[in-house]
Length: 205
Image (cartoon, rainbow, N blue to C red; front, side, top):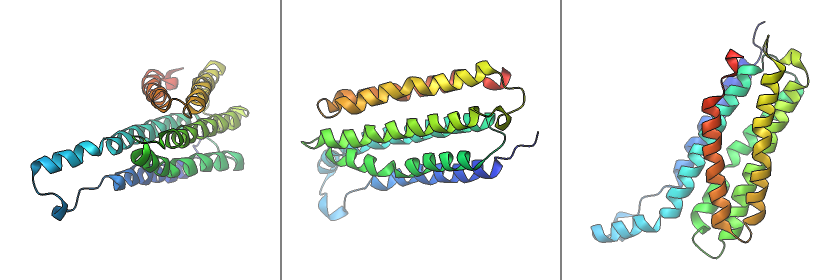
């Protein structure tokens, strides 16, 4: 069976690459005339810790999203309009990650941290829903999937994405009162996706 999703995957890879590159634009060096010595430069760098945190979280989040996107399309061989639009929703959200990242970088250390973290965690709730939607559309018609894929493999992917949604919702819910805890949950979920992505090898099922 010939794979029909090559153009979708190539376009998606380009969007992921652009999205992950946009994050670096928020990393700015100080103007030379504002820094007189190494001590002032060190102080400036220390004060940018929220920017480094936001960049690191979002970089690896987008990277792991790309890994999972690649794994999903290892299983999807055919396409229909619904798959293309569901994939488009994922790409729309991925492209928008740079905005909540900028909010987190600017406001996490201040009084507006709750709203900044809520917007950030809310973005990943939407992304998780979009991934669930894509796989639900693909898996409801087995003819769209790779030949020989088992029902167990289909359930494995479905469950893998379903597990994350309640946790993202919890992180979003508590971000209005406990932003540090909410962001910590996001970090734990990032590790979960990294580990689960490394363990799943559906091609051998």
